[in-house]
Length: 226
Image 1 (cartoon, rainbow, N blue to C red):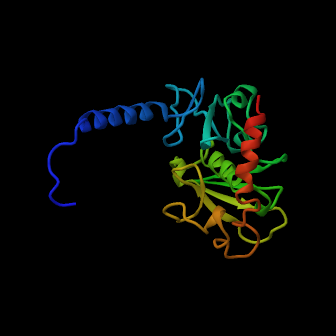
Image 2 (tube, rainbow, N blue to C red):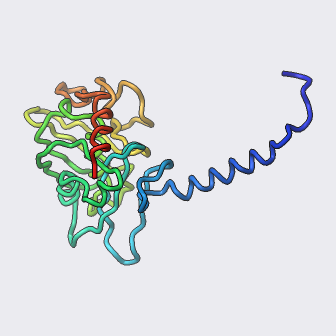
Image 3 (cartoon, rainbow, N blue to C red):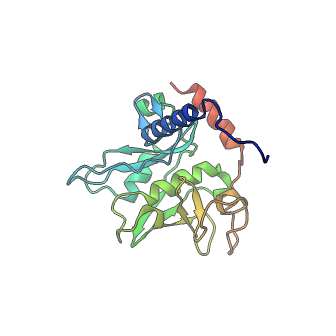
C-alpha cells in the first residue's frame, strides 16, 4: 500500500490502551483468584513461603484450560500425596471457582526417583481424555520431594498402563501444562497425548480415547458445578 503517509488519528491512544490491557493481563494471569481462574497467561508456578515446604500443585480444568492449584502440603508430602489429592478432586471452594477434573475414580501409585516419577495407572491411557493425562503428568512433575532438584519441566514422568507389559511411556509436562512426549520441543498435532505416534513398544499410550469429547463433557460439568 505505497504512498500512504501521515499519522492515523487516535492511533497513539489505541496503542496506549492496548499496553494498559496487556499490563492488566500480566497481573491477572498468574493463577486462581478469589473470583475465579485467570483469563489468560501461563499457568502459575506459585511461590514457596520462606523456609516452608513446597506446596502441592494440583492440575485441574477451567473454562480457560488446564490450570494449577496450590495447596498446603502436609509434612513429608511426596508424589503419592500429590496423586491422592489430585484424584480426590477439587475442593468445594475450588469447584465454586469453576475447577473440575476429568479423571475417573481409582488410585494411581506414584514412585519418585532422581529426576523422575513413575505412575502406575489402574486404567489404559486410551480410556482417558487427553486432558486427564495432562492432569496426571503435570501434577506428578510438580510434586514435592522429587529427588534431584530438577525443574518440573525437566522431570520425566513414566506412565505404566494396567495390563500393558514392557517399557513405560516417558512424557513430561510442557510450559502450557500439557503432557508431551519426552524430547518434544513443543506440543504438536499427532504426538503423545494428541495422537498415536509416540509409543514404540506397542500398547495404547498416546491414543487418547475420548478426543474432543473430553472438552464437551468438561463444559457440562462446569455448568453443573456449585
